[in-house]
Length: 443
Ligand SMILES: Nc1ncnc2c1ncn2[C@@H]1O[C@H](COP(=O)(O)OP(=O)(O)OP(=O)(O)O)[C@@H](O)[C@H]1O
Ligand SMILES: [Mg+2]
Image 1: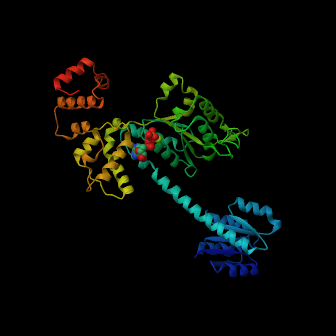
Image 2: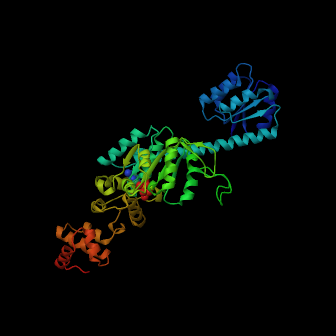
Image 3: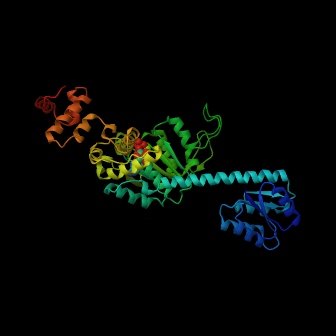
């Protein structure tokens, strides 16, 4: 049963409230501030109904002291009409609601209900925020390679700042993971982390997603909306695939970054943003600048700090740790227990090219866990083409044999097109012809 502490010097009010509320709650009574504070500490009630005028101290003082003990304390204050100034002050200090005397019992019940509902929502939210923070601790970014150590150093040095950050890395290297780690390790970690993928939507839609729009700004604008810059408040706005933003929107982005001002689409009011911007891309922005499709000044504004994430094949030494971490995560999600990785499988995992980086590794392991019969990751369950598997899982073979198998694999993949195959292999056509003859390859 939930408990309610009533602090009021008026005996009649205490009696009335107590007999009304004791049907559904455990009621604790106190006749002045001192007794109220003591009862609060002893009983830690779920809700306090507090009179703003008490004989020994002001209600505001009691309110502050209760909130010092528990910053989430749920407090409703009772006041008279001529006390509005104090009432406003009490709300500012964190009271949930005020009720005017003489009390209306229906209004009282409604307010108590609302307060409990709000509290349970707040509990849920703080639980979710905590869970999210746990998930994005730096411990969950795996890597001991020199390149990853550099990344950790940068995350540590920028987390407490508000500077804009630019994250560059191939697809699946962990750009979003790093952006979240920065956000959730910053002093603003209870503020929103908002993601917007700039490549997935059209230019007009992206503009209204970023800045919001007013009613009637365009045909479908039936009501006013908030943009991500506004929703992010003091949190982080993660601009994913920023290389795909159109020139028109690039100049608008530049303005908001420089001045912190923006306007809704179709709007006239200037709004301010305090959000930190983390931008990411898997494209080479410098070559986009050379081509003239990305503004150089915007690039420099975005990359106050630049973090470059290495491709997985550049940090093969991290693969065993990543495999262990990802298997743990996948097993937890799928309620399985496939954790054994035989040495030949680990060797294969270390030698594959992983063009899709950590995401591809995670997908490959997920598949292997789903298909596993016992508790072992089997080579057969790894989704790689047989060419690569043949090279790396058989007995150790001479280099010639590897070359033969690999050239055949590329020829097959290119459906016998020798020009394309020689380009991929970076050898001339005559050299390829020679190898085909030498190894008796089929085209
Ligand atoms: N260093 C790492 N340690 C643990 N998990 C990682 C690491 N890097 C990436 N991952 C995992 O790999 C997956 C892909 O990461 P993420 O989405 O951050 O990549 P991305 O660079 O944003 O990819 P894309 O460009 O395709 O959007 C996620 O499940 C993420 O948790
Ligand atoms: Mg991403």
